[in-house]
Amino acid sequence: MKRGQVSVEFSLAFLALFFFFFFLINVSFFRSSLFEDWSSGFSNNQKCVRIARILNSVYGSGPGTDWNGFFDGNVIVLSDSYVVFGDVNFSAELLDDENVGDFNGLAAYYSCGSEERMLLPFMQMYGVDVYYSGSCSSVSDSNLNLLISRLDQYDVVFLENPLLNYNSYRNAFDSWVASGGTLVVTEYLYNRYWGIIMTNFWWRGHWTDQNTYVVGSHPSYPFVPGQTIFFHKCPAIFWNVNRVSNYSFFNLPALSYFSYGSGELIFFPDLNAVVFGTDWNFPKVVASIVKPDVLLDDSVVFCEHQAIVVPARLNMDEVSVRNVGGIVVVENK
Image 1 (tube, rainbow, N blue to C red):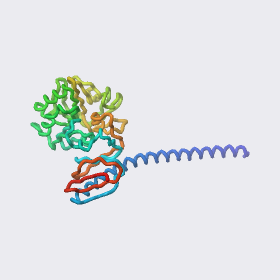
Image 2: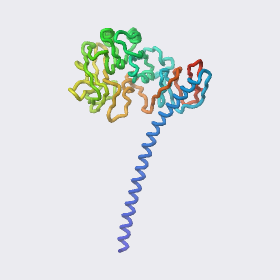
Image 3: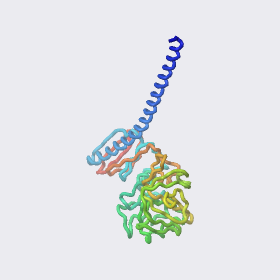
């Protein structure tokens, strides 16, 4: 074998080894990046759960218990069972301490079922007034009656699967929307399978687990034609509506909206939904109409606590968690 041949073969072998190791290094770097991204999200969840456990522990240990330390991130503690952890905008415009859980006129939220409150943590994040009942009534609901008595003081009202008594409540919402209100409805508005509201909106029927295809848009939401949205529960609606998405069966409207007088009704078939090709938290997207210019970062996570807590906003400075007379008070030191 000639020296030149050995040199060429050696060079080819060297190049092959070089590209092989270059490939391994890039694969390793890519997998490392994926792990770092995943571990970051996992870390936020773990940090949130740790905070919830601290609240529970201080609450369960009784009055006089005191914990001091660091939460390692921005935190909002909500009175109704939630801790919010992550890159939260703490501006006064988003959430003032005095607005948490109190009547403030920004927007209102109502749900009557204990299993139907997927919007609740986001409503509390935005300082929305919550009118919540633990069970649905076919006749009357004192919380809903209170909301209706205050309708004129709100611009936006969310009804999460409210199962209303049609005859009792239709006229109040008709008049309020006609005068300029925005009504956001999810799942079933009525406590039976059919109903008409605002003269031109009728829905009937029940399906489950359906893909819908985005064919339109709404100025307050990020949906664009071509997307596919999967809904778990699928009420069917008819009549004069603007379609954002259609069911695959019978080409019926799914996510949709229409104007009525000076106001608008926006309908979401379900909050248990997935927008394919995105990592959107669907209830967060629905709630964002309250503050469309202030969307929570995707790193924000929610977890539940079981303590009675005074609502609070906290930064990364040292934190004091105290049980005062059976109520947990959380403050930056």
